[in-house]
Structures are given as structure tokens and as C-alpha cells.
Amino acid sequence: MARIAEARPPASPMSEGQVARRDRILDAATELGARADLDHVQMTDVAKDAGVAIGTLYRYFPSKTHLFAAVFEAQLGKLLGRLWPDESEDLVSDIGEVLVALSRELLRRPRLCAAMVQCAATNYTSGPFGSAERDSALFHAILDTLTRSAPGEEVESTVRLLVFSWWGVLISRLSGKTTTKQADADIRLATRRLVGPLLPFR
Amino acid sequence: MARIAEARPPASPMSEGQVARRDRILDAATELGARADLDHVQMTDVAKDAGVAIGTLYRYFPSKTHLFAAVFEAQLGKLLGRLWPDESEDLVSDIGEVLVALSRELLRRPRLCAAMVQCAATNYTSGPFGSAERDSALFHAILDTLTRSAPGEEVESTVRLLVFSWWGVLISRLSGKTTTKQADADIRLATRRLVGPLLPFR
Image (cartoon, rainbow over all chains, first blue to last red; front, side, top):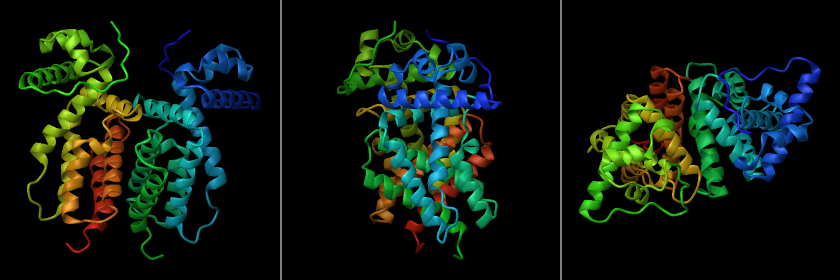
């Protein structure tokens, strides 16, 4: 049964039980999204696999688009927690390598990656509840790190452009328009050119 | 009546009459897309306004997505023909200003811009007939100019990253997540940082 997404933000989880329920939903969506194309992932199956009522699922995620945009953020958050360096001798190179590793990890499950990217993009362009790049884990991981090392006016613009570039490279790779080698080289080049000038004295 | 996009490339126009017919279709779609949201643009109305049979329309454009992706390319081509400098004293600055002007022009009709961007993105990510960035007028305008002035290995990567950045800034602006001033500054910064190092001796 199709439902029209309502013009309201997804419910925020509050209690421990709610957080656990939301995590179960995200895990179920991750598994289903890795196995079938987005069009064939049914919200009823997500609810069933997560062990929640369909109404509960829609309370957290008003649409499949919201759901997979949230899966994207959850995946990014987890991967960044694992990949982001605590300290860095060479920030430009380290950020480049994290971005390369990030897209490689996401591309290991191309079907899920396509679903997440499509939903995040739709969510982003379609209104005030989108996972704007400024709200995303990736944007903030880079911004926080750079702000400590390179305070200045252009840091936010730099991070936006780097995220846009990374995003473009990911989509290009996902659609088979570039090779893995090219994609990796593009990400490293973007990081060097965009972030490099912020750290001129290192 | 909805039609499923067939897995074949759009017919290429050949004769003068066919070119004229394709242009009339693109003009009709442009006008309709500027007035109504994409969901409310009907292929039957496009055919009617262009003065062609519905079958003819679908022969040129297998789906609304193909149609508006083609409108995007046509708009970009026209604008670039007008905005791209014949000669340049300062290529980095000139490319930046063209990119700024380009998004401003496209954003003058936000509804049409949203439709074009959404369709071009879907087309790009969904298969071999997409208007890949390497086939697009924008990619080639920049690449051809830079290849003459700055031959080298990283030119193609640079152009890809610049187009991705421009694209990200356009979407960001379109969805109201940045101001015009920020968007313009971001595009100029992207051009300076990405293209600047290719022309170190100017």
C-alpha cells in the first residue's frame, strides 16, 4: 500500500526503547535494500523484519525516501566513526583517504548504495526536512576537523565543495561512468586542490 | 497515459524537418515546465503544444525524464553559446563568471530548473543513455578551453570535479539551502581552487 509522504518531519527518537526500535528499522532496511532494487523494497517487509507495526515505521519515517536517506546517514556515521583519524600528521592526505575509503565501502553494496544516494538526493532537494549537506555526518566530520586546524572564512565553502565533489564522484562511479581508479584519483585531487590551500604552512 | 521508458536511446534527428520538430518539442516542454511542477506536465500537452503526434514525441523522447534531460542540455548549450568567452585574458576568472552566470540564468525559472536538474540527474544515474557529464555541453566547453591552455593528465579530472561542484551548488541553491551570494562565492572558489593550479604561469 503506497502512502503519500506527509509534510512533517520524521519523529525524533527519545527513549532507549525508541532508539533501539529505530535502529532495528534501519538495520532491516539496510538488509532489504542490499538485496533488492529500491522499487522492490516494501515498507511492510521492513516493518515485519524490524518487528514493528507498519504505523510505527511510518511514524519514524514518513516515506521510503526518508527511510533510505536515514540509512545513508546511519551508514556514513558508522563508517566515519571507524575511518576518521583521531590525529593527523597530514590532514589533506588523510581526508582524501577517508573519502576514498568511504565511497569504496559504500560501493561494496551497489544496490543499497544506489538506493541511499537516490533517496538522500531526493530528500535533499525536496524540502526543509532533507538531510542537508550541512546536517550530514560527513559535512560535520570534515568541517569540525578543518575548523580546528584552519580557521577562516572559506572553510565552510570548502567543505561544501568537497562534499559536492565526493558526491559527484560517487554517483559517477555508481552509474559506471568512471572506473574505481579514476574515482579514487578524482577524490584525492579534489581534496588536494580544495583543502590544500587552507593549510599552506604544513 | 503513463508509458514505461523503453530501453533504447532516443531517436536522433536527421533531416531538417526532424530537427525543427525536435526543437518545437523542446520549446513546448520548456514553456510547460516553467509554468507547472514536473509531475503536472503531461506528455500529451507537450505533443499538442509542439504540434506533433504523441507517438512522434515518444519516438524522440522515450520518457518525460529523457525529455527534460534534453531540455537541460539544450538550455545549457544555448546559454554557453551566449556566455562562453571567445578569448580570455584570465581563464580562471572567466570560467568562474560563466558558471555563476549560468546558474543564475537557470535559476530565473526555478520550476523549470528543478525539473531539468531532477531529470538530468535521474538520466545520468540510470543507465547508458544518460547525459553523462562527459557528453554534456558544459563539460566539453570547459574541457576544450582548458585542453588548449593547460594540456596535462589532470585536466579531465579537474573538469569533472568542477562540474560536480557547480552541480552541487546549483542544487543547494535550488533547494534554498544556500543564498545566491553564498552560491556565487562557492562557484568562484571552486573554479579558483580546482582550475587555478592548472594555469600556474599566467
